[in-house]
Image 1 (cartoon, rainbow, N blue to C red):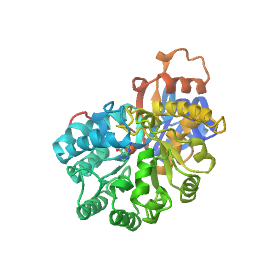
Image 2: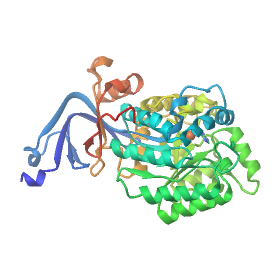
Image 3: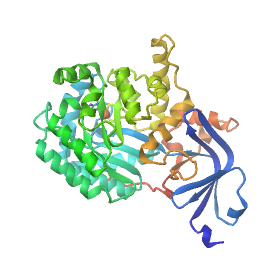
Image 4: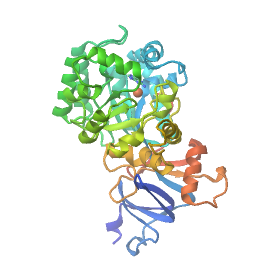
Length: 431
Ligand code: GUN
Ligand code: FE
């Protein structure tokens, strides 16, 4: 009896999670039974068979799933809040490429990347999907930092071999061989941290490069991330570069980079109906990054259209085009953006509800990692313990306490973070 429950942990508190986009489930003074790394069940009354297990009682606190960030540029961290009066292409040229080029030196990565991992930890982002830079050594260093931290992540070495400044452009052959080296070294190094194929976007990737990256993804079963249709100038440029293609999505699709392995496309502000349908059919995830889209005056993604057509949607901070690391801040920005979109669409595209964006920032993005983002049975126990007493009365429904925390709470209210059943301690901010 005792032995059978050796790996069981029981957590008690005010539990809130989203098993589906239209269902926020709450349980006051509930029990979460966790076996090693994953959830066994959620109970209002602890079943008899667990009566002898130790219970960790979090009292009045909220227990939420960890936040999931589907789009984050680690080498842009030091640039947060800079150059945000520009649009995408000048911002890339004047701010982003120069900053990213500094990661050629591993010593610079050692200065910045520990701060990145620390910031994700602090903000309760238990899983993230990360663009590194083109530099192999700095990318490996970031992968190792995540492995040491206990947080979950996909980390991609960026590929770009055309239409960018000399100080950052890659030689195509080297770009591919270094990508392969990272895939081989890191694919099986850690259950929580994996490499991901990361062509920056069509304008900076030659056709042979995209073709070979697509083949790598298939041959090595590696997931894929990129950008699509963020800004009108970008979309026009892609048309000029690829007059032979019917649209932006079909270029990725043609080269095996559009759902041939699980794929995330960031932004999706200007996709056509046909592209959205292809995303739904191919299982391509859209990473909605409203903060970044406001900052760079890109536009507003019509998230409701994507959801209605069956596309998997998650949220991204898109640091550094996004200025904040917090996924709750992206959730609330997504509600605000959707309300403006609703007005713009003559009230045809229903605004997002808070429960819906909470789903997008937990299970919606979490699906990319497998059974992640809710407290259903067999889901990884990724959780945050939140003490929201400072925010006001606790005499509210749990749904209201969640709403209030998402709008006006912050990292100071997060007391503990768990990933796959383990508490994650504070990572070092310096190397
Ligand atoms: N498109 C290509 N590269 C980038 C980038 O670094 N940030 C954003 N927001 N969009 C991009
Ligand atoms: Fe981005």
